[in-house]
Image (tube, rainbow, N blue to C red; front, side, top):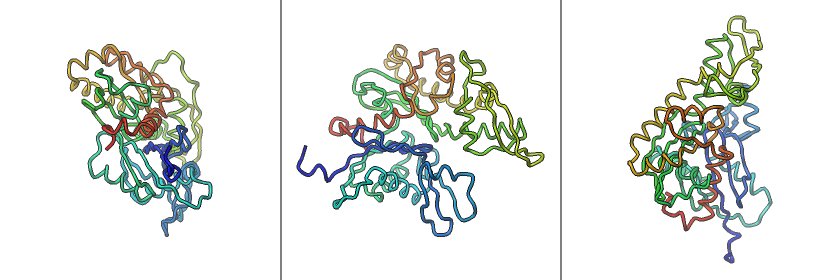
Length: 340
């Protein structure tokens, strides 16, 4: 340890469309929804994270809730900067005379443009980052689930987040081929909202759709351990009166079918691009599923049936990317070649 190490604070950020996680000293210190509540007139930030989520869909004309990231990239520069700054403050709550300089590693989707990369870097620098490094999400996910990315072996990782689904084949410390599609958790929520409207004449909000997805979300219409039916509350489109409707997991599997088919097509496309030697490795090792979407019941089975390959769901898939980003930060000298 150097004499002035206390002047530098190292943090790893998984800046997600749905959730933002921050790792500091090998611990997840912040795990909050990526949402900001602002004063509509002055633009002043009222709340971020969990507090702002409680306000979503319930605000009046003077308050608006903003999700700064869309499809894995920054859509609102100011809100993103304020959100990063606010979440960093949650770590450094202790009063200190000397403000430490921040070294950050932030993960980004593999399919984003140089302009979008620049936006992430600028937001982090404006929020107090002195050294800002970027790492691709599939690579961070692979490191997070314990794959030795520097080995000359092919591994396929599918990371289904809130805004993007990343499919990548990794070998020798690099991404050999990847496919990034903007179909993920948010689209699942939209599918559920649309289904409820069409099938049950019922209007539900984004938060309720998210809840339905967690409680009875499924990728297959027949499961070995089916969840119990879930009672949904919303507004009847015919009468305008609040009502209750019971929903089964097979209904949600039907509602999500279209979006899941797009993810399957992207997986097959990535497998087609894979060099034959790496295909042979993937046949032996199988496919690794990470991200919040990996928690969808029966998704591993569905992808396995489509690809005829074994599919493994990572342990704690929600935090795999954040864990990998934290490991890259801790071993920054070793993983220099991965950081942008």
